[in-house]
Image (cartoon, rainbow, N blue to C red):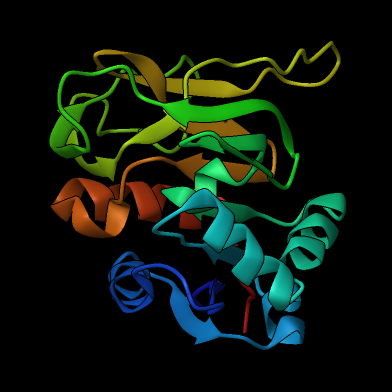
Length: 216
């Protein structure tokens, strides 16, 4: 008998946390909303949600030492999934209305405003998953729900063999931007899986399948 993987949803004052917990549970996880750093560190997977301004999310993360927690987990190869602004803060820099804010720096590059006639980009859109994707397995042609005005629009990380190349998923709204990244233990989506219906649940299930569980 195998237990469901334990997934901690980091409660640091930002994000659609209760919807994320429900969606993760529907996808097969033992999902727990927590501000307990020990639980968040020891869980099979950590989800970092985020909504609002880049700077506010970074301030809230740093206030609970979430930046250190994420760094420690990744240093140990332990899976982390960022959602929406929880994806954006993984980059080096956020540029919002002339204000530059340092991000977590897990990936190089800046998050900038979309060049589109109407902002925010709100609603359903298709994506183009990269070759070898695990997150989008079986849902490559589905639509996902976005609510954002900023995104990472370039990928600058140069990964050399023998390390595997990150899997990049793109979306187009005015211009291409990163909809998701799969980079070893670190994954992220710009869209909201928890608001994306059956396709979002399947994506979370695909991520959870990669976490493993404990045989009882």
